[in-house]
Length: 127
Image (cartoon, rainbow, N blue to C red):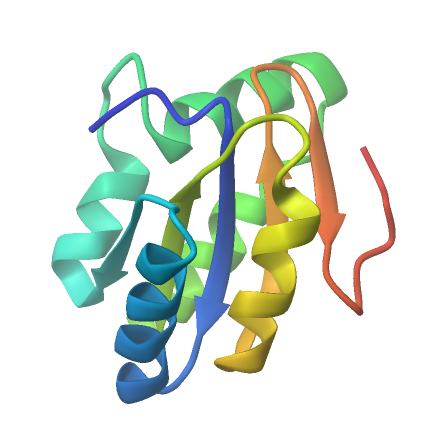
Protein backbone atom coordinates (compact mmCIF):
# COMPACT_ATOMS: atom_id res chain seq x y z
CA UNK A 1 0.00 0.00 0.00
CA UNK A 2 1.23 3.51 -0.80
CA UNK A 3 2.16 6.17 1.71
CA UNK A 4 -1.10 7.81 2.77
CA UNK A 5 0.20 11.13 4.09
CA UNK A 6 -1.95 12.94 1.52
CA UNK A 7 -5.12 10.93 2.00
CA UNK A 8 -8.78 11.34 2.80
CA UNK A 9 -10.52 8.36 4.36
CA UNK A 10 -14.28 7.95 4.74
CA UNK A 11 -16.75 5.31 5.83
CA UNK A 12 -19.51 4.43 3.33
CA UNK A 13 -22.15 2.04 4.66
CA UNK A 14 -23.72 0.93 1.37
CA UNK A 15 -21.54 -1.10 -1.02
CA UNK A 16 -23.29 0.20 -4.15
CA UNK A 17 -22.85 3.80 -3.01
CA UNK A 18 -19.20 3.04 -2.27
CA UNK A 19 -18.65 1.78 -5.84
CA UNK A 20 -20.46 4.84 -7.22
CA UNK A 21 -18.25 7.09 -5.07
CA UNK A 22 -15.16 5.41 -6.51
CA UNK A 23 -16.40 6.07 -10.06
CA UNK A 24 -17.28 9.70 -9.25
CA UNK A 25 -13.86 10.27 -7.69
CA UNK A 26 -12.14 8.77 -10.75
CA UNK A 27 -14.23 10.97 -13.04
CA UNK A 28 -13.06 13.99 -11.02
CA UNK A 29 -9.44 12.92 -11.47
CA UNK A 30 -8.77 11.37 -8.05
CA UNK A 31 -7.10 8.02 -7.37
CA UNK A 32 -9.09 6.09 -4.78
CA UNK A 33 -9.55 2.58 -3.48
CA UNK A 34 -12.13 0.79 -1.37
CA UNK A 35 -11.56 -1.56 1.51
CA UNK A 36 -14.15 -4.13 2.61
CA UNK A 37 -14.49 -6.73 5.34
CA UNK A 38 -11.63 -8.75 6.77
CA UNK A 39 -9.38 -8.04 3.79
CA UNK A 40 -9.82 -4.31 4.36
CA UNK A 41 -9.18 -4.72 8.08
CA UNK A 42 -5.78 -6.29 7.29
CA UNK A 43 -4.78 -2.98 5.65
CA UNK A 44 -5.57 -1.16 8.90
CA UNK A 45 -3.58 -3.46 11.14
CA UNK A 46 -0.66 -4.38 8.91
CA UNK A 47 2.74 -3.85 10.49
CA UNK A 48 4.04 -1.86 7.55
CA UNK A 49 5.85 1.46 7.42
CA UNK A 50 3.10 3.02 5.34
CA UNK A 51 -0.65 2.86 5.10
CA UNK A 52 -3.49 4.06 7.26
CA UNK A 53 -2.25 2.28 10.37
CA UNK A 54 1.23 3.81 10.11
CA UNK A 55 -0.20 7.33 9.89
CA UNK A 56 -2.49 6.76 12.86
CA UNK A 57 0.41 5.28 14.88
CA UNK A 58 2.42 8.48 14.20
CA UNK A 59 -0.60 10.53 15.33
CA UNK A 60 -0.85 8.50 18.53
CA UNK A 61 2.80 9.25 19.26
CA UNK A 62 2.25 12.94 18.58
CA UNK A 63 -1.16 13.47 20.17
CA UNK A 64 -1.68 10.45 22.40
CA UNK A 65 -5.31 9.52 21.83
CA UNK A 66 -6.04 9.66 18.09
CA UNK A 67 -6.18 5.89 17.75
CA UNK A 68 -9.96 6.34 17.71
CA UNK A 69 -9.74 7.04 13.96
CA UNK A 70 -8.25 3.61 13.30
CA UNK A 71 -10.70 1.98 15.71
CA UNK A 72 -13.65 3.66 13.97
CA UNK A 73 -12.48 2.50 10.54
CA UNK A 74 -11.88 -1.03 11.80
CA UNK A 75 -15.30 -1.17 13.46
CA UNK A 76 -16.98 0.06 10.25
CA UNK A 77 -15.29 -2.68 8.23
CA UNK A 78 -16.24 -5.31 10.82
CA UNK A 79 -19.87 -4.15 10.58
CA UNK A 80 -19.95 -4.54 6.79
CA UNK A 81 -19.28 -0.98 5.65
CA UNK A 82 -16.60 0.09 3.18
CA UNK A 83 -13.74 2.50 3.77
CA UNK A 84 -12.73 4.75 0.89
CA UNK A 85 -9.14 5.97 0.70
CA UNK A 86 -8.49 8.88 -1.66
CA UNK A 87 -5.09 10.26 -2.64
CA UNK A 88 -5.09 14.07 -2.48
CA UNK A 89 -2.83 17.08 -2.65
CA UNK A 90 -2.83 19.37 0.39
CA UNK A 91 -5.58 21.66 -0.92
CA UNK A 92 -7.94 19.03 -2.39
CA UNK A 93 -9.81 17.75 0.69
CA UNK A 94 -12.57 20.33 0.15
CA UNK A 95 -13.11 18.92 -3.36
CA UNK A 96 -13.20 15.29 -2.23
CA UNK A 97 -15.51 15.67 0.79
CA UNK A 98 -18.66 16.65 -1.17
CA UNK A 99 -18.17 13.76 -3.61
CA UNK A 100 -17.90 11.29 -0.74
CA UNK A 101 -20.84 12.83 1.13
CA UNK A 102 -23.06 12.69 -1.95
CA UNK A 103 -22.45 8.93 -1.99
CA UNK A 104 -23.10 8.32 1.69
CA UNK A 105 -19.60 9.05 2.98
CA UNK A 106 -19.27 9.96 6.66
CA UNK A 107 -16.64 9.86 9.40
CA UNK A 108 -14.16 11.52 7.04
CA UNK A 109 -10.62 12.53 7.89
CA UNK A 110 -7.78 14.14 5.97
CA UNK A 111 -4.64 12.38 7.12
CA UNK A 112 -1.23 13.98 7.01
CA UNK A 113 2.10 12.65 8.18
CA UNK A 114 1.71 14.28 11.61
CA UNK A 115 -1.76 15.81 11.40
CA UNK A 116 -5.37 14.87 10.95
CA UNK A 117 -8.48 16.91 10.26
CA UNK A 118 -12.07 15.80 10.30
CA UNK A 119 -13.69 17.05 7.11
CA UNK A 120 -17.10 17.28 5.47
CA UNK A 121 -20.33 18.81 6.70
CA UNK A 122 -19.94 17.15 10.09
CA UNK A 123 -16.21 17.89 10.29
CA UNK A 124 -14.97 19.78 13.26
CA UNK A 125 -11.65 20.94 11.85
CA UNK A 126 -9.88 19.19 14.71
CA UNK A 127 -6.25 18.24 14.49
